[in-house]
Amino acid sequence: MHTRLVALLASLLLLLVTPAFAEGTAPAKPFRTQGIYLQHYTAMTPNRLERLIDKALDVGVDTFVVDLWARTNNYKKAIARMQERGIKYVPRIVMFADGGNHEQVHDRAVWEQRWQLAQYALELGAKDVQLDYIRYSSKNSASPQNALDIREVLRFMKKRINDGGARLQIDVFGEVGYGPSLHIGQDMSLFAPEIDTVCPMVYPSHYEPYEEHFHKPYETVHSSLVGIQKQMGQARVPVLAYIELFNHRFKLSGEERVDYIRAQLRAAREAKAEGWIAWSAGNRYDILFDLLRRFRDEAST
Figure 1 (tube, one colour):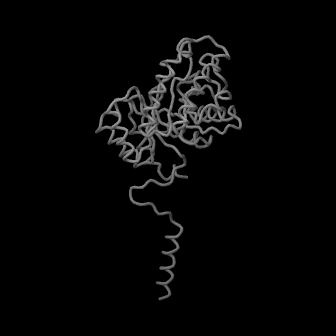
Figure 2 (cartoon, one colour; figure 1 turned 180 degrees about the vertical axis):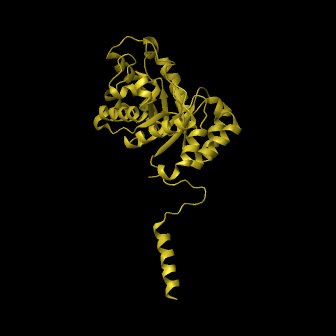
Figure 3 (cartoon, one colour; figure 1 turned 90 degrees about the vertical axis):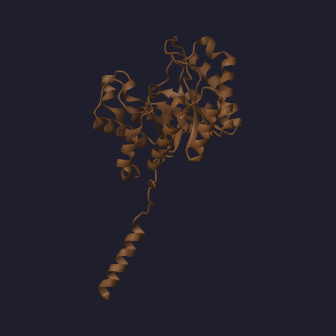
């Protein structure tokens, strides 16, 4: 009798100290946002979209950043399906294709066209609007004025987006973590008061010299994110890190890619980023889903 009582008490104690997860439910996430980027074509392919939603929900990916180019019924249906399944929709709107020149950056008609896309996203239920290529072309002459010009665009877009009940996100080059970029006109100390979230594209293989950064994915991502936060000072703007799932310069084996991705995720976590968005040009995310499933317990701590 005594032995049975001891065994019963031990079982009850184990239940009290062991966290319980419902079958198929991911444990607590270390980030508030975990997302992937989708091309317009991917989102418009129902079977592929459904598979991505299934796999994303299984591993705790909660956000899809989706290209927005025009108003269409098929786009509206795709976004509604994501939201119905519990995925957060964030539109990606290209402000100036490949970076703007002086005429484009100052053209109010271009601003209005992009605002019309943002307004459509708000009608679809978006609570965040992400602007990419919010910069001058990299071929532009270097000048502190460039960032001042881009700031005016940000002020225009932020007021309208905020008035519509949503927040403004912007994508910036990862190199901006080391200081303002005078050619493209991105300066985080200047931009911080004009945005709600910053999404640095901290792809290790895109930095120069790439031979150095390719071998140091953790250090590259971590130093860039910390640098951006320092430049923003007291603004406390949330940071969502864009990470890459492959190396742009060198072919990696399967396990090397897993290590490469995990190093970026660890850097984002330890730099206290609010979340991350994974980028794959072809929207191939199986390796990400597999590693999130494989290291599920570790990722939750």
